[in-house]
Image (cartoon, rainbow, N blue to C red; front, side, top):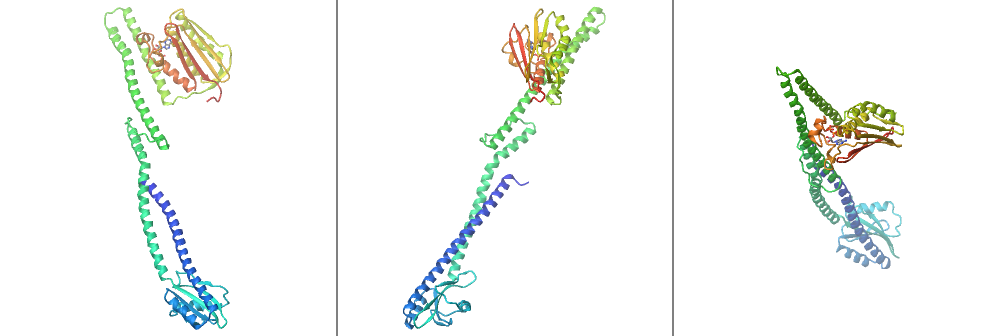
Length: 461
Ligand code: ADP
């Protein structure tokens, strides 16, 4: 597997290298071309000045003067007549030069001005210009030649400079890109290690703050994930400990009373009493296990809300018939108020479960001769259920905890009443699964008000 930092180094370097080659190439070309142009221009202007002199004073002496002058320089002048036959030359005429002169003779039209004959320094040993002259006694051509050897040497020196610059900058580039990629990928590598730890069950990873860019956001997302997992782990351990505790109490009763009930020679009445206690405790255990199962389903998200449309008031009336006997039994009054009937879209089984749980609490945590009122008020989008009791109420310090699993305000009393502390946490999850909200207000000794908002539209989100 190729490391991401290696990949980045490679991509950066290749891109910048291609760019550099282009730039160096054009720079090189323009330097060389301007140098050649300078050389050509210089021999051309020298040729032109010879032309001026010859047109004014054509004589053997002038010719020799010109030849002598050029023999001291690295250029060669050749003056020919109309037929391209040399009259005088500052140096020996080499075959290369003859070739160039011959080439001109092929189209030996009259050259009004001077012109460049040869400027291809790569192919030819000479660059050359020509200009024609007309004096009274003689007409002809002045050829100027310059050997390209020194130019080539210059250019090859330039080439080696460019090569050194290119190689050095390539090495520097690889180095810089390598460091940059390392800087860029270091947080990524840390995050990779962190997620590996998390998947191995080590949740207390610490990632350094990595700024506010995408990498920083990813890093804090991973940090949050690990923190959340750690909390969940701790909560799970605590929950399991609580559950074992909750189960142990009734099981101890069952165990104890079974031993007592089996004793020989105890009165039948006693035995019935013990068996009754055993039955009650077993019921508590069954209820606890049922609730736990319900919560497990909620946690796993395997449970689904299956919504359907039904009428609100008849639904509440059926609920009333179902729970009212229990209220009458405790000499309590239950009122269900549903003034505006409406078709609502919700899961009737879950909604009933929510309300049954709340009504059950209102009944359990109230004294006799008190009233419980359930009001349902639908608007265009939601239905609001308000359940008011005149019971014991919940003190302000306990109020924030009542939705926690296994939380009970008064352990001993609620146990007597068969509470397990799971009811409200199930209610809350069911309400949230409906995308609804639940709020509880309570005054100790006066009573409790529970309010639920649930969306009732077909495609409410
Ligand atoms: P439980 O199964 O014990 O009733 P819940 O989760 O339903 O568990 O409720 C948690 C605790 O909140 C209860 O133990 C009780 O102390 C308190 N509580 C719930 N509803 C009421 C109420 N209507 N009036 C007073 N206390 C309540």
